[in-house]
Length: 247
Image (cartoon, rainbow, N blue to C red; front, side, top):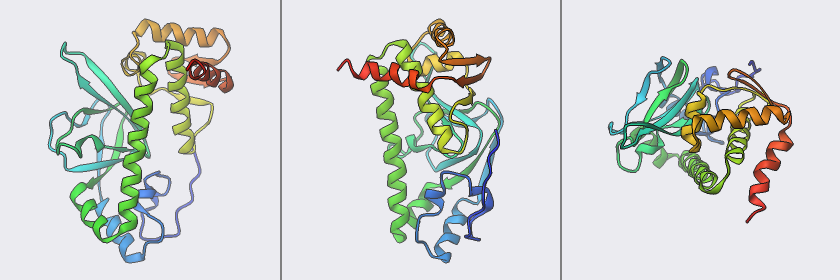
């Protein structure tokens, strides 16, 4: 999957950030050169995480937010009976680590599903600069509230949907987030296993596999191992909307 990017005119920002959705955070509109330089300094540190490696763990002190530059993560918590409950998937261009703000420590593990690189943004520095630069403060709030809305959407999704509705909504959400980052509207590589999808959606592994097979039979998707091609987006939307029509 390739995409073309044009570097932003602002020399203060590294070209690497030009195709990152976090430019909203790193480059709030209407900032002066000097302010941009200061924001750029905050995001100067990067960390590479190998596939299967952990970015942070449940209970660790919260110090930074992380902007995912490349790669894919899952967040999960261990349940009382020792299973891993997947609480979310995060991709390049999204922020991870917001869970730590409330209690000053992380409330989940963040595990890389493929080799990844993140920009480390020390939260105290972001807060400090936010007090001076109100445009930055607004952007931080916007990003946080978008995350809350997304989480709320998931809660509703899992509340009362059938298996096919859950999987359809999951695929639509994933492809929509990828498309916002310049990828295809109809093709995606699933970085997570069927088991991880099941854990996230509250479905058994067999149910996830069976539902994928049904979508294939109905000509809605094409599946080759982890490569999924959506052949009929409208059908997926109908499956999700049929649920909404029940209320």
